[in-house]
Image 1: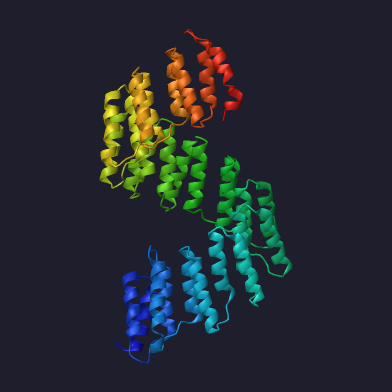
Image 2: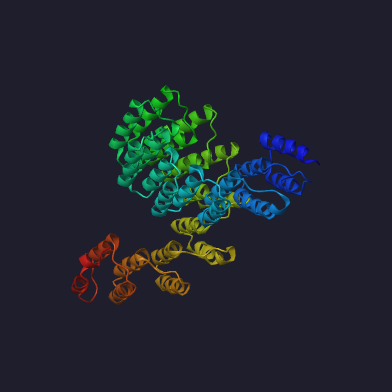
Length: 500
């Protein structure tokens, strides 16, 4: 195919919005292999840009790979432009390889291209994303030294990096500097600062900044209001959050999935499930598709409230709406079922998990183990525990503590001690909860030597007493009827200094 025909094909494919990554890669190689005169670099860049914007996990590595092929084609008269190098640097930074971005920058300097603030902005943003704001500022300074004038976006990137590293004072210094240099902040700059203030809990200052931007005729957008709503939800100010929600609608700003998820999560945390469900229904009426985060909030809250039937109903609606539950969804529901004596239903949910390709994890089986013990099915619980290795599940502190508690409550203390030794052999360290179960059991059984042994183990392993374990000791002393001066022994431990 002639170069002119290929160029037309590239324009058509890249402009369609339907180009797939494999097709794009193939088209790029066809451009490289075209006979002279070679296609313009513009068409190579069009493909690289199209790939970089695809929703594909390999989009950035693919761009870098194609760029390497392009570099190797210099001998046939194809040379990367500054636009090419800018796209590649941006991809390097987006895949958290700022180091590669600097390598490409070196090539850019070597060729003699004049670097623009967009290219420097990609590197500065990449460094901020990695948390290296100090290096980002050095690159900013180098940019200025090379005579490249920073723009509002460059300043905003630095301000965002400082906000994310909790340096709000530093962020406002840069904000003031950009204004002093005649660079007017835009809606993104103000929104970045408002978000930083909201996340730090300074809601009063965030509203003052909102008023300032409106006074300057910079209109807040959906992201601005989402930041404010999120800040109030985080602080539990649901009335104010809902007031902002209604205000943005009056201003003609349509709430998005993030807006609804934030409010639903806020109402769920305040146990106002009726309002959360109303918002879910409103989302659907407004043609917004709830995602897994939306449903997880509601399912988790119904589950925590012991309303497992409602949780199952929402799970069913979720699947009917073609939103795939994840392991978090299932675990919340399984935990609720098990705590409410519904282990039979919990087992059915685990079967459903497996059918849908969501592998149960240690949290799943720990919940089921706890449910079986609560229902008095200790032997079945032990059988489940012993089967975990075959399922590829490694028990954690919580799993072992549940089984130890089950043995102790059923007065099978020797078996509980065997599990403790097994736990340590497997490299899982007991914690204050694990040892607290034994302390409570041994006090009730008036076994002073065993109490001393457990406390000695805790001391040797550097595990401080918690408030719960302190109370176990105090209650144990008060109810002690066995031999030995338990009160003097416990006093010698100096509980106040041992507490966490």
